[in-house]
Image (tube, rainbow, N blue to C red; front, side, top):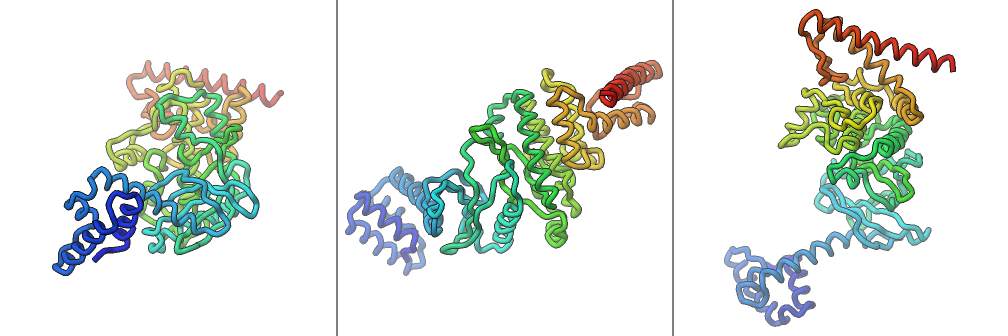
Amino acid sequence: MCNREDSEFGRRVIDLKLASPGEVALCVDRQKELSDQGKDVRLWDLLIETGYITRSQIARLNKSLDEDSMYRPAQQIPGFQILGKLGQGAMATVFKAKQLSLDRIVAIKVLPKRLSDNQEFVDRFYREGRAAAQLNDPNIVQAIDVGEAGGYHYFVMEFIDGRTVYDLVSNGKPLEEKDAVDIILQTARALDHSHARGFIHRDVKPKNIMITKDGAVKLADMGLAREISDYKTANAEAGRAYGTPYYISPEQIRGEINIDFRADIYSLGATFCHMVTGRVPFEGETPSAVMHKHLKEPLTPPDHINTRLSAGVGEIIEVMMAKKREDRYPNTKDLIEDLDAFGRGEPPLHARKRYDPALLQSLADGGEPIADVHASTPVVAGGGQQNWTLLLIVGIVLVFSLLVNILLLVR
């Protein structure tokens, strides 16, 4: 039996004059005969078999039909004129559109029809819209509307004319330190606004950080965002890893229930590391291999990979990416203060305070390697003389830090 897809295909073949209406009708009749015999044959196979069209023509037609099918749901949204497609992922397609009532350009995210029958995906889609609607910050993509039309669920948001951080790092080259710090600082401010309102983003990564042509940073995609007080969703998701493998925090990998704001700090740290080194913190042949390294493998200090980096940047990233969340920044405000201080040419005191005690404790315990802060720094047990030398170096560093703190207090 000729289905709707075959009917649309046959119509396009006739419209493009690749075959005559009579030739298509003959193939449709043959398809019905075969269907009555219990044989399921596609219309295009019969058109090829009879020599009316070629396989290359079929491929071009299918591509054209796919593009039409992607635009069709967006065209059904009342009050908006679709101007083009901005991008497509596994979860949604995003279109550029004009909001007719206000004569402004917006972006519309549309949930695919195949996911619209899955209540979990629909709920998550609307949860994203509600989360974005409660956030009002210049560094967060603004929500405009969410709804359903023609059986399609859509989410209208602010249109960002620019590019993503992923576009900047996709060539494998590190960004300039100053530029990277500025982008991370603006993103941290966006997260601080979100955290203050009880939302965890849970998917901070280069593709979700956008930069306008004016240099403003916009945090996007609240698709995995969750209120920290939403225990029902937390329990429903227990044991499952939500996030992107290259940037996901260890506690998200373990599927812990009590995920908090420090998970976003870890992911932002992984993004920061990628930006200043030109490569992701951990690589592997499979997503599972990458996530295993987030759990177990020490982080190579960023300034060991890019030797042009300032020590302060390395310290900030290592504290952000500590395996144990209690060793990270306790909140985004402390992180922002360190980034601001670094921008002024001052040491990141919050990071330094968390690093120095960890180093001293490690040496006091016999020189064992530090697991979570500066984990890959070559500090190991190996003889009394070596330990005394290391203690002397650490003592000098601590004295220097003390003098800096005194000078800052006096000033």
